[in-house]
Image (cartoon, rainbow, N blue to C red; front, side, top):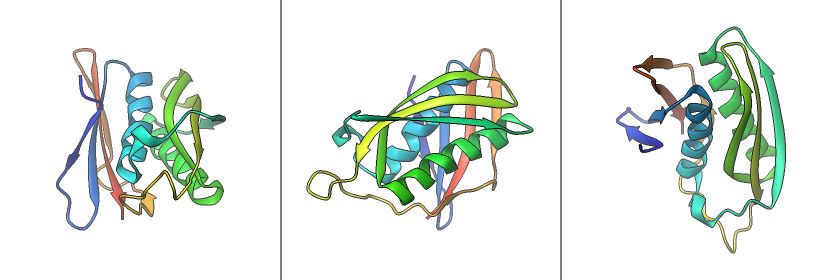
Length: 138
């Protein structure tokens, strides 16, 4: 199963994210975000950061998770390439992301992502397969 695909969206980037479970969906969402930002294959898992959230829905958790990853990149220059969901339910998430600090000699920025939006946000489970729709503001 592929992790994600980009979808058409006027002036922004739409993502359709896939997973065999809710934890896999959230891990693939982190991967999709950073694969959109940079060449994720050039990022090494040199440092780890832990994230914990509580929200009212899985959709809100997804935006919070992806937004926190993006915020960490913007404020600390950390690019992530591995995402481990420690625990998740529809109201809480505990996860860790691994990566390294941005180095212009190694990394390039493919897309400048401003925010993870609630526009067209959706998470669905069908026959044991999970799918999310997310739009990134670029």
